[in-house]
Length: 565
Image 1 (cartoon, rainbow, N blue to C red):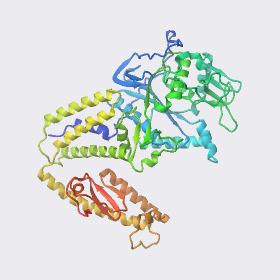
Image 2 (cartoon, one colour):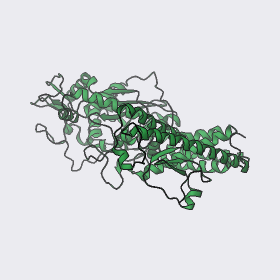
Image 3 (cartoon, helix red, strand yellow):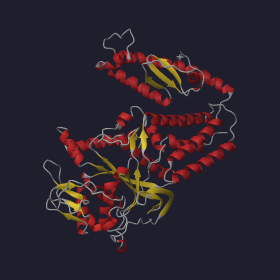
Image 4 (cartoon, one colour):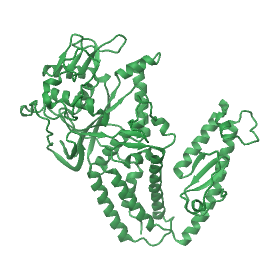
């Protein structure tokens, strides 16, 4: 019997990062304004359940503070808007966590529930932070700074295997639309112009509708402005200051406020109704709250966005503060990917609910790496069996199909319950356990495999020794490589000659290329002592050779060259 393809496909749902492409519906048009009976009454905050296509999914809606059936305006099409980055600095893991988590949700909707997700993301390329950073960095304009970090952000997302949206839209490419949007809000009686040339949203004009997402309580709104009628009022247009980028408007030269960009761009694409709006929980107030206010004031509707989804913060282990640039407690995406892979980070995100805060540490990443390794090993063994390269006891087909069917049902049920990825991972790991029980090799197969292991270990030793010698030569100051071994600190202090840098790069590439094959070369400067249990039952066999540790995923028989005492 050949192992059921569905079994491997089910497992690869995690291992491949849910590889799937979004399909874009060609018939999408802007929706028209709602009829007169939907005009805001100014007295209601009640969420209105949408009419349309029920996806069978329940998701936590920040508007109601509970799980609600996910109902889309159009059959099998989800309109989705997300707040993108303010591009003034490097993106960090806190950003990555939010984008990867929502990428997972979109893939689940596409792959499992066959929903076409039309995703639009804004790039904030004009903002106080961008202007301030450009002043701190000599000889660079806010525009150049923003473009530089925008491209870096896109490269980071690609490296993390986050699917790009249907379209990225920059704020500065939509200034005329933003001006028109503000003019209409003023015309509808929900904004006012000050003598200083600023335009503010009038929160009093919508009564207690302001506060749909959060209980405002003692919140007083944005500080710093002296020409507002109410402390809760927020800027739609800011009058220009000397040496700042500015655009023409009916109220004088200036630039958009922070919140108006998202309402304008989302409305220009999706019209007066949006299925899903997403972002980090820190954006709920004031950003998303203000988006709702100004969008419903513009469209004169009772409900603009039907579902608001918020992801939890990422914390450094032991810290109560979120990872952020302002606190200087962040790890950039580029630096993170020097130590871990995109799939390992995705598994790290899958092990918690997307709404939950998540602790980042070496231990939590090790758990994700171990889980991914188990999944990869099973897929490898299953493929080997299907290709006739792994001889094992007869497969109990009935039990296998039964467990596969039960797992598929469990996975779908968990994902339909607010995208419960931890429960999904548990179900799939249970399936892998039972699959591994079926794939136990026979004694004859085991003997052949042992022989192959010894052969492979010898090859690995020679390859790593050769790499070590090349690297030692590249790091040597003089033409003649030193005769005495170097200490770790001495190696780290070495600066290679320019013409030998390509050799070091080749050594690094060799190391990185071996990692996906299960061979990990790590710099170690102290001998490793293994207990008898670790040597016989350890998950990895460890070979110490020429200042390096080579980890090879073989679960039996001490390979040649291992240090035992």
